[in-house]
Length: 440
Image 1 (cartoon, helix red, strand yellow):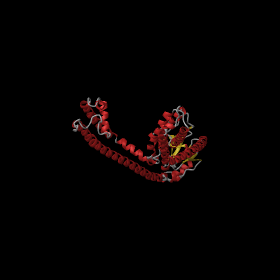
Image 2 (image 1 turned 30 degrees about the vertical axis):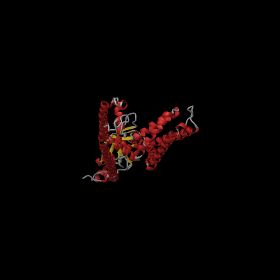
Image 3 (image 1 turned 60 degrees about the vertical axis):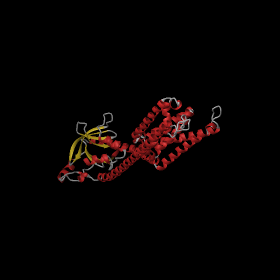
Image 4 (image 1 turned 120 degrees about the vertical axis):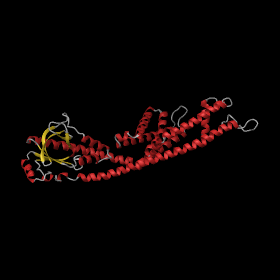
């Protein structure tokens, strides 16, 4: 029915594995010959009458299709079979007909009947299947196969479920605020150790380049941090296996840093190892949601930032060209070529408000008005106007991007709550026995 199909799609909207499995079941095909364990023509009780169907099953699934075709009409996963009853009586309350004489006739004529029950919260929503084999031998063989295969499938699913529950528990612990804050503290501690190591770099090696006792101590500490982060990476990989892990950029960055760090330790390449240790602090951006939001907001503002930097570069280049034209002879070190002139303009932009090579007073003590106007106009236009306005525009863009990200997160959470509420309705509908409704 349409209600059953809709509920199958919406029961677990936020769980990717369950959604994928449900989609696979909805698109199931008749088992291949190599996997097929049985292929029989049976009768199935539908709407108060027996209908001829083709029943094909493997060790994982049962499919029902039209006779002599591969068009799947219904399926039963083996792991969701609760019980298979031999010679089960036909239940009149499950037959949607209003003529009791038909029910009596069906019961009298029924032979080689068996019943398959499914779990209430499974793909078939607890539906019971009344089936009739063509012979006693077929009935015994089908029942025995279904009992064996369903028991084996249930045991496998139980083991898989226990493993999945343990994985979910590890994931919740790993993703908790306390765990992420603890990891952040370890990253900061490792960064501080690197700072102390760089501060005392001359004391970590002797004149022959060998590690001193203090240098060996720092290396042991850093090696311990590397092993701890490697264990943390393995726990993360286990908790988010597999798609959720590889879709996260910060997880991939962890993999690169940890693998290269371990490789550098094995090769004793201390220069590369020290460089990688410095990059570990970047993992802080992935550990705290507020930092990730800031980076995403900066990413959304990158277009305006690029335009802003282009404007500054163009203005600095214009003044650099003017400087080469006017002061190449007077100040060759500062304006002798475009690259020198451009770096001079950049120094002024960064706060160096004068060029030492050109005095601001002439020999007679008067103001060097020509060069003063050149520098003052650049400072006013670029430093005071463009730089300040550009900073305000970037700040506005960053705030708008942050608000947009927060709005998206709120809508996502609201949508999740609505789905959870809808799930409760579906869970209620699942237990309504549609077979009890009579046909008008």
